[in-house]
Image (cartoon, rainbow over all chains, first blue to last red; front, side, top):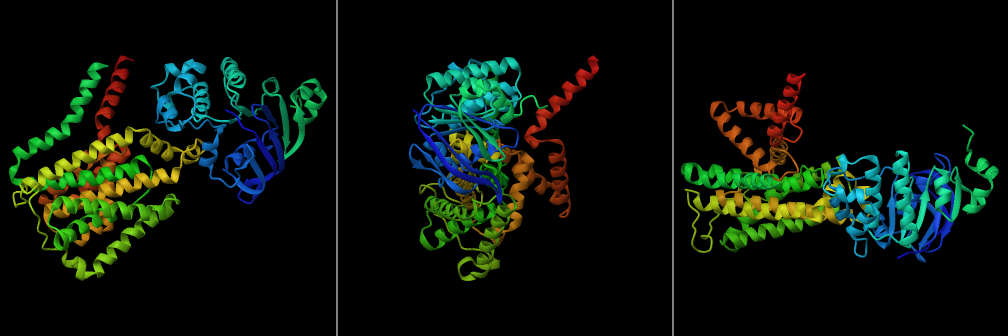
Length: 235
Length: 323
């Protein structure tokens, strides 16, 4: 199951502080979109706004043609907006199975399906959240979103802070979801190479505004553009 | 694995076995045992709201008191049938729990704490002023009860009250266990840890909190009804802030989020109170206070954590020996 997302002229932030200033984007059903930008550009705020966790000052959010910007967070999740936050936010006192059980919604992935995707989690199904490694927690965070049956999956820097081998494993899993599940996927990522290899379309944020919107192929081909937008190598 | 299961089964049987043994071993003081069970139930109700769901409340006495007054007034004015009165107490406290919960559960932290205090204060003042209904300071007297099922009579020996309390406690315990191990109960654990994340995975947090708050209120009301029936008296103290404080101390003393915390905490609290008060009427608060300080400083999980804490110390000591 999949759905489209249309965001128009979004102005939002935390309380009176405005972070996003007129962000518009469109994701067609089953498409993949990479959100790029430096730290503090507004990537996380964008996801939080889509979920209804920020203060919305203006703009509209349509999911499958339906306005969701006035809905409470849990209703958006139930409509099929899956969100894997940067902090992972695994429930530390719950086991892997229980973390999945509390997030399961009708029409979501059955546990066997997420365990097929993440065999490591299947072995740890009775382990509590506080005893999982960083990589396992990230897998569980993604699995927890999948058992909710998302039509659109928001992934906030899922590869951050993990060992290279774990990053590769996770990336494989993300590719498998992209190719087999037909879910619309929106990925915010600092690892530009992975993001560009993953998504068809890309969007670059800078100080809450969009400075680039186009095909990832364009960005991949034009290194000068990459440099200018993402300041690669400036360090 | 199998051995662990047998040990666990024995562990579960222990408190109920003690309750039955007490009945035969101390027939002269069944009233005390009944009081202990009432407070265990009361503490268990708080464990659901405060321990599992993290609802910061000091208003649990509101439901205990409301349950007690409902059961007492029901017996005096409507019907002396204890079971009907008990059900009425549960119904009324559920209703009030749902209504007040709907008003306050969108808040958190100190705001929520103050609102729960306000609710218990309002009820307490009302009971104090409405002397025609509640007897005010003199308490509600003249409660007469029919025998349970027309057979088991309430009398001064307290046998009926004892088993009545035991059966009610067991019933609520089984229900509470089912609740906390269900996906609903596990989601409360998640809400306590991270309500935002729970919303983001599609959980209607406010409704879940309202549901457990209502169940917790009904359980506290049931404990209050037991108290009214067992003593055939309801005093203003059931709605006292101190009553909320006492049940909180009992729960924290025993340990939250185990259901059994109330068993240990309430028992220890009442036993210590009983014994040290015999030595000196001013002494028992000192002992309970000291016990509470020692428990929260040394045992993270309350007195239930005493065994594991000793084992940890032993392991550490042995590790030191080997080195």
